[in-house]
Image (cartoon, rainbow, N blue to C red; front, side, top):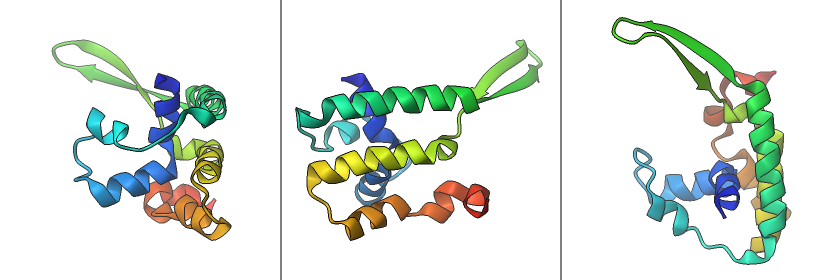
Length: 123
């Protein structure tokens, strides 16, 4: 079940839903679980979630910081925008599930794209 919600949380559709309904400062569990979903698309979302996780791990950066109290600290930096093709596939599965038209799917995939993609949009 966690993989399904991983893929939903990464989708453009969830971003649209979240930005319209919540404050966008604190993502809480109830916000994710209020996103209605039935179980007939589980397999597709699980496969896409695994692909997204693998792709993001390939593209992650390691940030090394020399902290005064803890010494050298390494953190992983993930940029979901680098995995946009997989996220768009998640949206296509969700669009079929909800019966969206091509126009509605296009709107969702491109919603807030210039803010979410930044400079990568121009590449």
